[in-house]
Image (cartoon, rainbow, N blue to C red):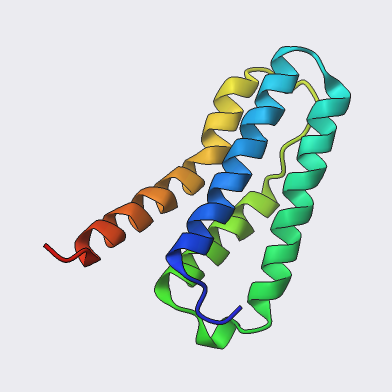
Length: 115
């Protein structure tokens, strides 16, 4: 991963968010197989990205480092189909670092726009 654009990072984060929302929707409808499929897709994507980033970790930009940190955090707490109580709260907590980085990217993009 060499100087990944903010747009690419944003797209990847949006992909993870959309898949986690699909997972959430599947759980609400008691569709365990669909939920598990979304979990697998999310986890595989995160692992692929982490592997790609870790090969060039000494030359990362600020946002690439933040992206790596967010993905590392998500990989430590993978989503599950096991009933663990209030999964709406759990999903919101899991999505929190993604949302925070998206807001940072939007903020940085707004500051770099010519006026």
